[in-house]
Each structure stands twice: as C-alpha cells, then as structure tokens.
Image (cartoon, rainbow, N blue to C red):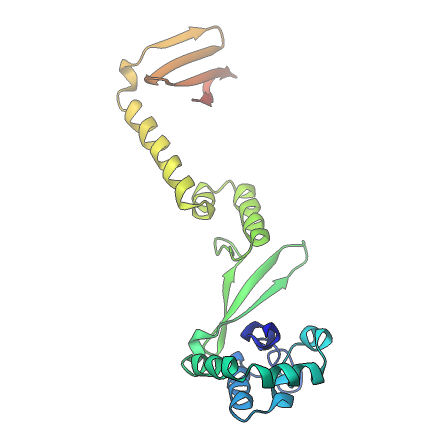
Length: 205
C-alpha cells in the first residue's frame, strides 16, 4: 500500500502556518495512529497531494488490509532519532538561483547553493552548482562536483603533465611561426600559440 509509506506523510506536519511541527513529531503521531488502528488520524497526516490521490474511505480500507506491513513500519520508525529525520528547504532568490538550507538542532544552516557550499542532491541542483563553479572559474569547486571516476582521470592527467614538465628545459620544442609543439610524454603533447608577444597554451593531448 504505497500511500502509507513514510514519504507520503513526511512533510505533512512541517508547513502548517499555525502550529508547525518537526518531521520526527509528525512521524511519532503516525506511529501512534498505526498502534491505535486510527486510519483517520493517519490520513490527516498525509500531504494534500496524497489526500487528493486517495479518498479517506479508500485509505481506511488499505489501512486495515495492510495491518502487518504498517506495524513493521511502525517498529522501524520507533528506532529513528530526531537527528535521523532531516529538515531541508530550497530558497529561491532574485536572480533565479536558489540555496538549500537544513535544520540542525534548532538552527537553519546552509546545505548548498551558496559560495562553495554545493547542493548536489538532485541532477538540477548539481547542474546549477556546476554553472556557478564555472562562472567563478573555480577549478577546486568543479573538482568537488565531479564524480570520483572523473576526478581520478583528471588527477592522472595532471600528474602525467607535471611529471612530463619536471624537466621542461630538456624537452624538444618545435616552433613554426606563432605556433609551437612540445612532446612531454609518449603520445602526449602541448600546443602553444604566441599572442601579443607571449606564448600561451593552446591545447593539451
């Protein structure tokens, strides 16, 4: 009975303007409703979207039919501590960006989307974080956003480049007008171009 799973009730008690409660308090009320066989109390904890998807009567029928599953769920929920049930919110600001904040104890803290506090919990958040890192030209920030595999590949390339350039004065450089080429390792080279009297790296391979 999927309508009774925890995500369905998770935020039902978090946004009430008159008397907001913590998620762990909502879950405690949910467990109490299960223990007492009170389908009405459990239904009242559902989000508006869940209540729109299933009627109170349909919920009550499923509640009774899935008693064993619900009791197992209640046992699992009792083992949760308040710290195991995080509260998070995404806050939009003027330029279309957003920051993610999380409740730690009694204080809200930045969880992502501000400066180098990256928010990577969804593909969209990761793309926004990547864009911010690129806009700031922050190599360290980009590296923190990459997967372990991608970071490892880049680290390997950087190490190979550093090792290959450790004796740059001994490398053979082929100059052709405003372009130059140096092979620093078998199969790996650097193309350079002269701009305004200075040599700059054009490409690495």
